[in-house]
Length: 477
Image (cartoon, rainbow, N blue to C red; front, side):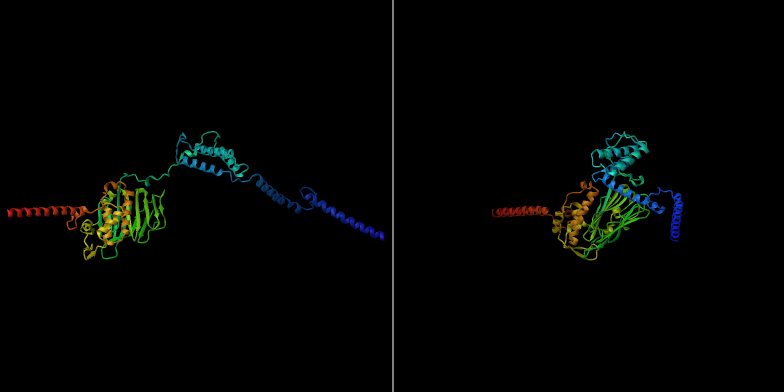
């Protein structure tokens, strides 16, 4: 019986082995893997390729770190800058001084620029510093491929970038002023004093809002407020510049700049500082809160605005043709026609008379002269202003006593000379009032006149004494 049991166990074991072999036989042909060594089932084999990929990636990174380092000493970017300069300059038809190159076709443009790029890359390598730099090889191969696409040979013309004079950006024809290069200048400053486009000097009351310029391109308006005290004098406390719409050169709406006492903004009303192609309209802040310039390039006009103390000064230079065209209209423009007669002050008569009290500019009461003429004369002479600007300086000090008006006269003269240097030829270096003293007899004579009269009186007295003595001698005889 024991033998039978053993035979049964052996048979059972043989059956299980046969079944296992059968299963193995069924699976084997279905899997088309790498064989049977160490891979009993498909999942094991499916996990192998990702592992190999990770290992391969790590190996590449290690090799790259060792053999293809990016070298900071490789100045490959400088070659791109040269290529971009050459390409841009050729496209803009720049002046290629000293290169001797004729006009280039579109194909030549690409080839010359790329060839210049490649030559720079080769020089970079010859000078060292790019060995093993992967970016160097990448850029070099990219340039070669570009040259191949454009059928460019490696030998041929190149451009020395040091001899390139870049062309200025082209301005649309409509935005370049084509009129005569003859200009006129107008300015307003101080209490207030006006120099018109036609060179007439005036001192005015003009309290309230008044237009300085008003033509088809722009409008400039000022508001003058009374100065503290009973002098009746005024000064500019607000200035508005409106540049009318120009769809091509500026904007499809108007642009406005507005300054007032203690506020000289650094931008236009909408926060922008320029409009149009190549900044056809541009506002430049020269000194924060004190000095701005507005350039309207399509009419070649410049506006200067300053704040000095509590008040504003204004100067403008504009082409004479635009000014003359505007003068034919009936619109009031102080810069063109000057102040109305009823608003003008005879500053020459006032300076000559220099009384302690004068008739108020409003004609209703007396106003006190705050500073004697002699003191104002000394201050303004030290400020080195001349002619009308000297007169204005002294006038303002006598009326207000505010020395900020001295700075206003100095700045106004500087701005005029900046906008119109030729004006210096028409100004005299006068720093006295003898012409006014002689013209208006109510004033005190000049020192020279007093000396002449003193000499004559002395001679007359001496003559009288001599004649009296002679008469006495005759009587005795």
